[in-house]
Image (cartoon, rainbow, N blue to C red):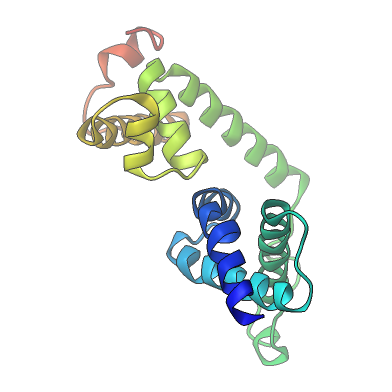
Length: 186
């Protein structure tokens, strides 16, 4: 029985590693935990398959990963009773209508700054920072060198930070890039 389970696991589950890793990367903020999360999914799948083998491995693995992430998120939301005493007075960090409006305005500024980036730079920033792909994955997906990805990320993030600072009335150390002065056109 164990040999059959091992063979099933190697043949059906391990080939899903890329898909599983991509799912975990998209849905879990702390990328340093990805290997541990993937291993925990494997343990859960292996133990469950020891009791009853699923008909299709891929949906079972992905459902297991989803449940693991839900469990982890719930655990992170638990607060020890002792730590509540150290919280600031109620009302200090409430979400007021003014804070809500300010947050929406900042988000709109960020989207406008992102839209002003040159197309390739915007796509690199989107894939790397929003989709959570690695530098190597972005390079492969876009057909560019990893050095180019690195330079485009630096350029894009610098432009986004500058745009947000300028919107807040802060001064810049250097003039805006030519493409930003031209309304986002390269």
